[in-house]
Image 1 (cartoon, rainbow, N blue to C red):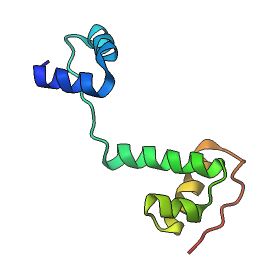
Image 2: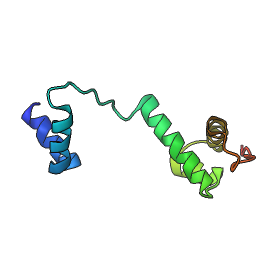
Image 3: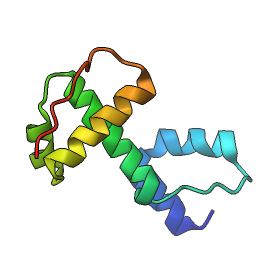
Image 4: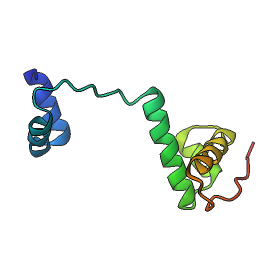
Length: 95
């Protein structure tokens, strides 16, 4: 590992975790995806659904994430279908 990458890794996850990662993956080449595109979108959508289940409204979440209320409602419906969760029985679509 280049020393600049090693120093950056230490600054992000700390020395102890860096050493654990080196011990576990030393000599391997790892690909760490950027937090954008599908990786970011999926993480964001999971967070939106989690907050919705904790009581946030689609309107509140739309403001928090800078999305249209209809988009947030569609995310909630999709995540509900994926999880088979009945806690989010009906999502009122806000236009």
